[in-house]
Length: 441
Image (cartoon, rainbow, N blue to C red; front, side, top):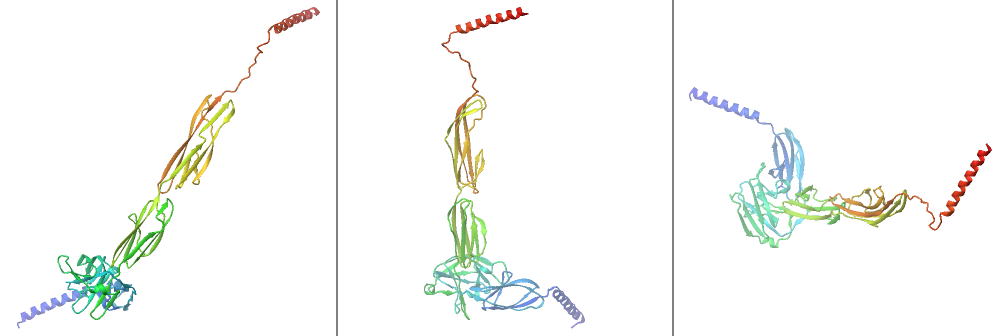
């Protein structure tokens, strides 16, 4: 070999060595942790995303992670851990089975056509709570019986490869009673092939999960949910107790006339004061189906009010400063389904009924006849927006007269002659006295 060729080879090797050194230097140090799972087919999720199934040594960049171990039909084990370079403590996840069994009617979903049989399978949602297993547990090999048994209904089937977040397959799947639906995950079109499943007609209750060397039965429980009220008809201002419950749901929501009221817990109760007719709806969804339930309370927002004046006609008589007659009346009122009651011109009143005495005085001060109408009104409202107004009137009539003056009156039968005689005698007597006084001077 020529020297120049050796030089070229040495140069290439040095370049490769430098490149490898740079790549190694740029590669971050990894943290390792061993996760041991039981049952053996359990799936490991990291930060809510599928990672791998079975016991596994995880190699991750240092940092904080939420590591969850899931297997349908078992209580999951989830913990948050900070991984560091070097050795980290092992996680031993021994899951506890849910003891309940699943009964029909049911059908089966069989998934074929995907090269990665470790892909995670979800029904009706993405997330660990919707996880039912991986494809290898439900592809029904000729020699291995693997069955995904689900309640009759329509499902969103979602498939996600390990260590990925985006589904590679989504589609609607109708499950028919005692039939097996075969889904080709690799097909360009969402094809469905249905075949009879005779075993479904005679099979007793399934455990939620049961697996052998080459067998697996995953039986998904149906979602059950309901919502109730203790009263369905109330007056404004009254309270109702709303109760809801669910089983085998992954998520629930409760709304009041379309507005959010609660999200989880899966069983709950609230004391509420609806101000209008309200429809409460419960939406429960899980891998075993979707349940919608509702209940409605009718709220009586109408206010009823009455106002009555008795008597409705009153007399008033006054002479000078003296009131000879002053009639009175009484306002009687009622208000039903009301929170605030006002009677004008008196203002706020309390209670849902009552009476107000009326002493009626005319507005006019001039002399003459009285003819006035006094008007009163009641307005009742409630916190539900209800309102009612009524009026009542009293007719006041009478007279205002001046003070009376006394008059001298002569008797109609007397004669004026005696009076004239008396006046003449007085005149003579007065003249006699006048002359006597002058004489004595």
